[in-house]
Image (tube, rainbow, N blue to C red):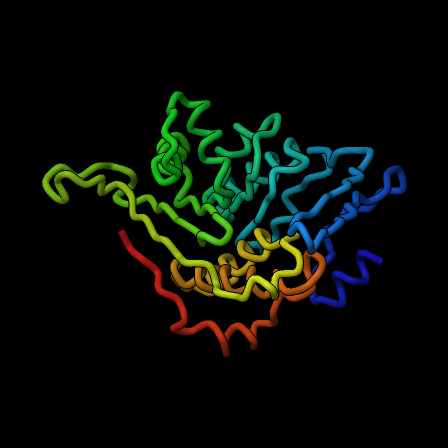
Amino acid sequence: MIMKELESAGVGVDFVLQSDRTPSPFTYVIVDKKSSTRTCIHTPATEELSPDEISGEMLDNCSWVHLDGRHTPAATKLGELANSKGVLVSLDVEKDRPGLAKLLTKANMLFTNSKYPHIFAEKHGDDSKDIEANMKTILLQLPRLQFVVSTMGADGSIAVVRENNGEEEEEEGKGKDNRFLTFRCQAWQIDAKDIVDTTGAGDAYIAGVIHALVRKQSLESGMKLGSYVAAKKLTRLGAREGTPWRSEAIAEVPGIFHVEKI
């Protein structure tokens, strides 16, 4: 059923690994409209994906790999292979996991939430409560990263981008850290009564950003598109229902957002 659904949506399944030893993981999501909360009951797979099941063939004709931190040893191997082949790696991190530190070093782009930058910074001796400062700490600790994007729900999203190869220029911009550029994008405005389910909104946002970037659009344009895609998803139950087709986005997104460059 899962394979058929992916294929019907136009998703390639050539390298989907199937096993008769373990069921697919699944999650029941209980949405309480009165309290605007959700409860997730997750049933994980009984076996982790093994690094031995990862091969370089998976990256043939591939220019971009997106990882979410699960099956961390296998994801790390895929990241290493991608690095060796010049394939871009983006990573979605919401919380700390065993082995995550090594996986982070393989990423060119990091997507996260409002909490993880603080977790990362604290582990590296920075107790700042400012999310922008903590995102800069991530970039300073992980030199492969080009940018970090954090989603903040109704407060929109923020991106910190490495400039000048992360090296501070003394003669220009005195009094300002010119190693980084910061962008803020407001959340797509929808009526609160139209919000049905937040499940998958973060993933929808990331999909919008990546969709723009692989088509050589700017990160700012990607943030706009991500905000739109996430908002449309909020209006329907489930992780995928409500996500728009590209034709809808083209008709509704241009010129709507203001992105602040700091």
